[in-house]
Each structure stands twice: as structure tokens, then as C-alpha cells.
Length: 562
Image 1 (cartoon, rainbow, N blue to C red):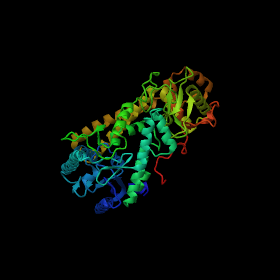
Image 2 (cartoon, helix red, strand yellow):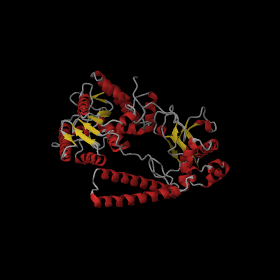
Image 3 (cartoon, rainbow, N blue to C red):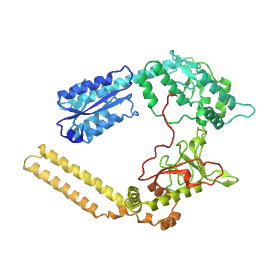
Image 4 (cartoon, rainbow, N blue to C red):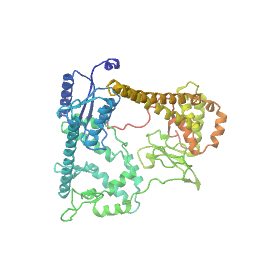
């Protein structure tokens, strides 16, 4: 429906629907929507948006419900007049704090909240108390369920039943015991054989590389494919398709930490793990068995002795103050950290500043996935050479930009912030204050129309507050207008490339990284066509500020049919 038509409606309603566990036979969402639309019709309101959170818990605070957040934002922006839910426990099971958030939004925006099954309507007197009690009851029900589940899990552990997701190498029986998955068990035994080879034991990285070369599915991908096959066999194609389309955080690749975690897990010995060790019965103290062993206890003891402690994979390195990673916030030593990625697999390129080659320091950028023996041919380039090539490409890009280029305008504005941070901060502060004053004036006018300033005294009080706010607003606007705007579009430093290159050499690492971030969103490094050739700029691909993001770099991260 066009926006112009929506704004002309007398009452605009939005529906919020939620279900914790969506199945192929569930009709809860349809019933909630049907009830909500019927209620909207009774109110002569038009449903302008339906928000649905499927497979989302309303109890756990760590679960993000994007549709619920979007519904509340729509109310805050006054794009809807009524929020309708079928029952309060569909909106929240987090108790009084979230009920208070709903009440606050109703107070601030004047919108209407309706819970059909609970009989709650914010137009009725005492609805706040009704909502608070209903939200508390919903939270209490979920909390009681959580307590019962905790007690149940303790009994299940004593009985030796498996309660987690399927571990690699096993299948979960209907009795919640573990049985051996023959194909995956053979992979595990081959891994153990190589790690414990008495003559020439393999390293974890070597084993990970071998597994990737053989094409074995990593544990996470193998578990996903097994679950999809289970759902299809049970006749639940909807859930199977949703799981197939859901993106995984990692590619189908083994790494040495994955191998380490696999061979040091006590579940491989057939015993039930709990908090990283073998679970013992709460009364007898006996070790509880959950299934057959794939790795013998003797071999498991040796493996845990060899690989049981975590090996640090990074150290905090000294760097120029202020030169810190955008993601990890740790000091960095390379210009391209955070900006450079592997063009072969899409993984981040890490900067190893302390690697030594032929007895000399040889700082380098390398594919992080390849470093962990992941499935990637790997990309590598000496650090100073990569920095110089990308810097040269940056200068060429700046020289080719015209004044009205969208990228140039974005770069120049950021450049002005670096040159005049005090102006930028003051401008933002004034803009925020102007917005606050305008909202305050609008609120005063609304209150006057509602009759809150009655009589001579009320009129005097309104005029005093209104004039004072209007005076502050004019003062802020005058000061904002006095701040020069021309500086925000000053692109002169970027056109004088020779002078800029000379200045570049004097910048420290932090300043160089700041300037690089003005021009470059991301860069990818590809392998050389043949070994032993001199590094060239054509091995890079860039995503410059103002350009469209490349779509054909990286690897697919969803389960395929094969």
C-alpha cells in the first residue's frame, strides 16, 4: 500500500505474532493472525504491517527478535496507532521490565496496545496493572519450566542419557543414548592413528590439511546435513528447507582447533561429558557411560596430555599508539589489517610482523583460514610490498576522482572530520540540541491543545516555557549557521597527489590507517598465477568508497543438495 494512502487512514494497526518452535503441522501463527485481523476489523482499523518471529524464544534475553524490535520502532516513529498481540506471552516472557517498555512507549507516543486473550486494552483504566501481572505470570511460567528442565537434566545425566546436539562420530538413539556413526567413526580413528603414530606423529595442522584434501565434511556441516536428512525422513520438509537455507558461521573446512577439540572430548571414550570432564553419578560417584567408545581410554589420556591445554593463537603486539584493530581493538602492526581479505576463500588476512625467513625479519599477510589448515589454497604476500601496492592504488584512485564524485564527497567529509574534529563535534552537538528543542516545542503545543495549560496562569506558564525554548532554538541555529561548511567539502589535499604522498611518508601507522579507511572499504588478495613471480597490483581487488560491493568473492555458506 502506498505511503500516502497509509498516512490518510484513521487508524493504522500492526500485528505481532510469535511462535517458539515452528513445525510443519503448527497453525499457531495463522490463528494469531486471524484473531488479530478480526480485532482490527472490530476497531475499524486497517492492518498496515504484520510482524512474525518464528522459532524465537520470548523468555531468553540473549535471543534477538528482530520483528519485535521493528514493531516497537514503528510505534516510536508514530507510523502506527495500534499494536495488537494475541496474548501477552506472545509479546514477551521476560516479565515486568519489558512490560514497562511497552507502557513507556504507549505513554510517549499515545499509541494503543491490545492483548486479545488477556482482555488488555490501553484505552481502559488500569490496563498497566493488567499488563504487568500478565507479563509477570508469563515470565513465571517460563521460569518454572526452566527450573523443571534443570532438575530433569540432572536426572537424565544420572541415567546416562544424551541431551545435546549430535556429536560427531555418533548417532542419537530414541532412548537418548549414543550409537556409533560408522563412517565418521572411521575418520576419527584415522585421525587418532596419525596423531599417535609412534614413528612420525602428525601435527594437528597436518591432520586438518589431510582431512580437507580428502574432502571429509567438518563436524558442523556433517551435523547439519544429518539433521536435514532426519527432518526429511520424519516428513517435515518445511523445517528441513529452513535449516538448509540458514547460513553457517564457518565454511565446510577443518582447522587444527577443530581437530584438537574432537580428539580431546571425553565423549569419544563413551562416557558422558559435563563441564569439560567425565560426569559422575550424583549419589554413587561412578563415571556415567552414555555410549560405546571410539577412542580408548588409554589413547584419550595420551591425546589429552598432548593437546588438552589450549594453545594461544595470538599475542598482544606492540604498535604505534592508536593503531588498533576495528574488530578486536588490539594493537596492530600492519597497514591493511581489517581491510585485507583472502580472495580465494573470503577469510581475513592476518599480519604476522615477527616471522623470520632466512634469518631476516619477513613480515607478511597470510590467509587466516589457511593458517589454521583450513580448506583454502592460501594467499601470501610480504607486508611492506602489499602496503606499498595498496597505497599506490589509493593514490591513483584519489587522482582519478572528480569533485562531484560520490566517493570524493564521502571521502572529503571524513577528511574534514580529521582536520577539524572540534567543529564536527560542535556541529553534531548543536544538531542534537536543535532536535531536542523542536521535540520539546511540539510536545508543549500538543499539551496546550489537550487543555493542560488552562486559565491565565496556565497560559502564562505555557508562554514562558515556549518563549524560553524558542530562544534557545534560535541561538543554537544561529551558532550552527556560523560554523563554516566549506571545510566539509575541501578536497584540495587529495588533488595535490605529490604533496599528499610526501605528507603520507611522515604519518604514523595510526594516521595512515585512518586515511586508508576514508578511501577503502575492503580489499581482496588473490594467489599469483605461478610461483616465484614478483608481486603485482593485479593480484588485488578493491572495494572503494562510493563503489558497489563486489558480489562474486568468497564461498557459499549454505547447505547444498549434495
